[in-house]
Length: 215
Image: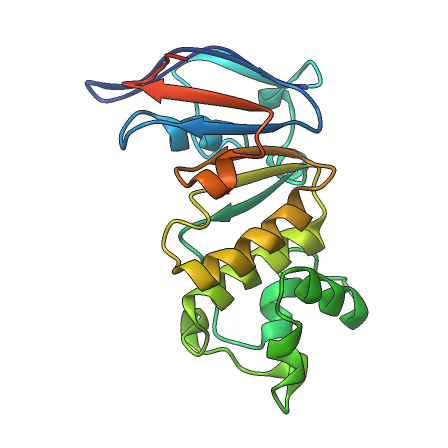
């Protein structure tokens, strides 16, 4: 269970979140909607302590996240966002970043689940193929699926998706959506989204506006 209680967040003179209360059951899919600037991403960023609230608390299974080390806390989360960061190097090293001791077989399984088996099979260097600075040799959809493969390999219990399909064309979105559905299976998933393909399978939909949950 994730518990968010009376969260306020202020940046300078600007209040981003205003009294956010939310309970998220283990294994549920919760989608957060709202216009740009409504505070959706800030709520998601509270959980791994990318953002520290000005007031209120966040609990995981009743334990305040401030009482956990950052390393232990962030082991609980896998993040897939619209802004994918890949480093210059091999495909294998980029996927294995989330679990450095993973075997080649585990990396291949993660890539297959992320709809990237053909990328490996069709390249003479397979897993060891160079992908260029920030994945410059990959398409947008392939870059996003590498990010999903990382999350699959990490196997964290809580998944954070922040507009993960927002910048993709329809064909790429379909492949990414399939991969996301595999990734979400059996996990608590918190999704910032606006496309109906993501929203339609939600257990709960949270609507935000101007830092409030309004519905």
